[in-house]
Length: 55
Ligand SMILES: [Zn+2]
Image 1 (cartoon, rainbow, N blue to C red):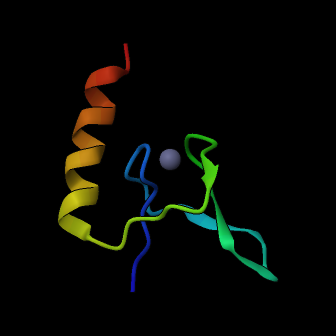
Image 2 (image 1 turned 45 degrees about the horizontal axis):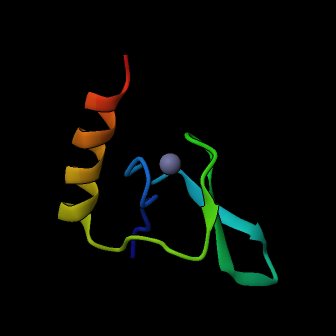
């Protein structure tokens, strides 16, 4: 199942350490944390909001 960054909605997320599954890192916005989105529709909304925030 696809995983999405809760901050920017990117699917470009990976584990910080392969043996530490509870922490995620987003390669697009630099987010690091335990929260990750698995809902594609929610990720789409986050992506839209993230875009609006950017100058
Ligand atoms: Zn992100």
